[in-house]
Every structure is written in C-alpha cells, then in structure tokens.
Image (cartoon, rainbow, N blue to C red; front, side, top):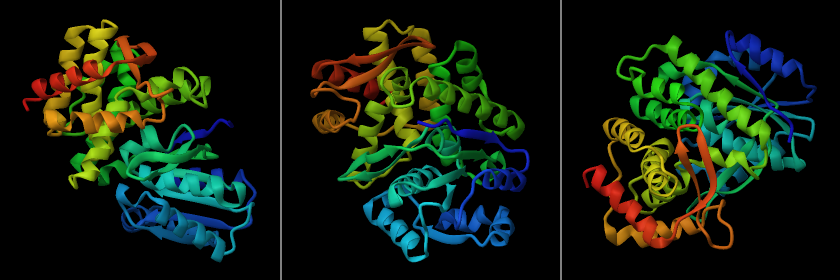
Length: 353
C-alpha cells in the first residue's frame, strides 16, 4: 500500500493547489455532504472553480454511509464523465472520507483522491491510514478496502465550527492514541482543558495524534500485526454503535469508542495487568465528558452477537487489543463469554447504571 502524504496545513488553498498539481488528472471532482457544502466548501471554492471542479453532494450523517449513497456517488461520477485519470477531493468528516475513499477505490478499478477532513474524528482517524468503506446490513464498516488517499490535508481552522459533541467524538480517538503511545502523551490528553479550547495547542495535539497513527500504519499497512493496536476500544465500541442504531438512539462513533475503552481497559486490568490507577483516571475522564450509554443485562447477548461479527475475529473467537500499561500493547487477545459479560457488569457499575 502506498504511503499517504499528510500535510498539517498553514494555508489550505496553497497546500491543496500543491497537492493537486503534483498529480496529473483530466477531471476534478469535489465530494461534500450537506453540512460541509455550506460551512467548509467556501474556504476552497475559488480554487475549485478556477479548476472546473464538478460537485457531488451527499446527505450528512453516519446513517447515510450506505450502499445507496455510494451508488449515488458512482452514478454522479459516471454521468459527469469521470475516467480512471480523474481526481476526487473528499471534503468532510469520517463518513464522507470513508465513503468517498471507497467510491474512488472502486470506480473504474480505482481513481486517485485527496482527503480534506473537517472534523476532529476524521483528522485523527478516519481520513488517515487508508481504510475506506461503508456500513452494511446494520454493521459498521462491513464493506470496504485498503486504499490510501494520495494526500490528506489537515486544516485545524475547521475545528472552530464543531459543536461540543463532535469535538469529544474525535477526542476519544486521540485518547486511544495516547493510551497506545506513552504515559506523557496520555497524561497531557487527560489534562488538556476541554472547556475553553486553545486551538493552537489543539493543533499540536492533533499533529502528535496523526503521527502516532501514521507510524503504526507504516509498520503494518494491512493490519496483520501492530496496526491492530488502533482497534483499542473498537471491538466493544462498534457493538455499542450498532446497537444504538438498531434501537434508534444513535450515538457518535467516538462516544461509542470511549465507552468501549472503558470496557477494554477493564479486560486489560483483569487479563494483562493494566494498572488500576490508570484505569481509574481514564474511566473518570470518560465518565465526566461522555456520559454513558445505557444498557442492562438483558442486552448482553445482543452486544455479544454484534461482537461476533467483528472483522478482527478469527474462527468465531472475539479478538481484542489490550494493554499491559500505557504504550505496552497486547494484540490478538481473547475473552470468553463469561468474561465479556463480567466486563459489561463493570461498565454498568463504574458508569453508575
């Protein structure tokens, strides 16, 4: 898999022009959702108009990260004359970069694309690392491909448009990166003042977070080994997320991951010796900033069934990434059904359910 060029922007239009000019293309396309079309597209509209970019707009929200929306993008590319030599720019959050990347990876067996993430979640996670895909049959990212963007342009000025919930959704992935990197970075994330944001400092933290992910992806682009570290919190988190959609009480991805981190750090403390003081500090941060997703014991079997569908599993054995300590990663860990149900008991107890 080719390595992505990741640019922490000083001047978005100039950096985007440079990324475009480094690639030859016959037609230029820009994919936005309804929100980024309104709030983010104006920042690059003049440059796009000067280069005759063709716009494609999709509905916003993860519920629209599906085969119908993907088909719409394919149709627009086809009807508006895209070829194997065209270039697609994805401007948006993780839903847009995931779906747009998969559309690019599959249209005419692959066209090049550039990601411009506009949410914290997409900056530190979805747009970086080459994973693309859509939700299918009620399951998160069930269909997809490894297909890295040619360039990822990170413009943190867009973060000033985020509401509190979308900020914290992305921050959960940053916290995960802290947990799998080192104690110093984990501690500075727990202590970063999230009530009055210092955007200069936040830009530095975003840069660190992206670098952590990029270093891991470079070592293991196709997730055969250490890249599984990035799945911390996601085995349970995706189950919470899928349940939230099934029960029509949808939650943001990062919130589900945060609650998944609570669960999987508990498993880490039981199975691999993760320190209880660091478990307690992390759980307290998540409880204070993310609230909780309400479950009762009647729903354990359904959550377990969702976890059995996780892509990381082998031969029906649920696969976890656990930690011995901050930065000490244990991939390919398993837990039996009783241990998983005890994990849910811990989650309910520590979250006050």
